[in-house]
Image (cartoon, rainbow, N blue to C red; front, side, top):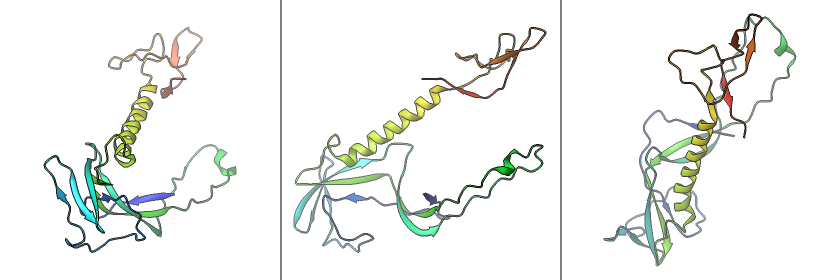
Length: 199
């Protein structure tokens, strides 16, 4: 498992370049203008030459409300959260439960942030609809937002929990929570909590 460590100072900004090449190197490069000098054309595409090959790039913006980060997976162990102990409980149900084995969590350091990436192709700039990286930025974020909206729509907070129990300032939900009837015929809520719609 991985845990991102938030840096104490603001990370530098950068623009990652996704090249259509396999490089046997992982890490920073001291590239000079002689080796890497991209030029932007009038239509917004970028042209560069890498080892004598012409590359065309297209800038892909990270959607608003998101930011990209460059991460480095370290061998350091991430700090473990302290366990919350239930002191003063009347029952001893939890005493017989076995403790879970600790999970090995590695620290991931934030090296830089970015708001756009440049995706490169040979001789032609990759189309946003065809390139897997460009599609991934927009489609994955759209998919994640759709899942979040669906999850939110399927979770209903039950404010109105019975026929005779109506709070003044709370909306009445579509789905009724379970109620119990006491001997005088009044309905009272079993428990005020989140209920999920069954699909």
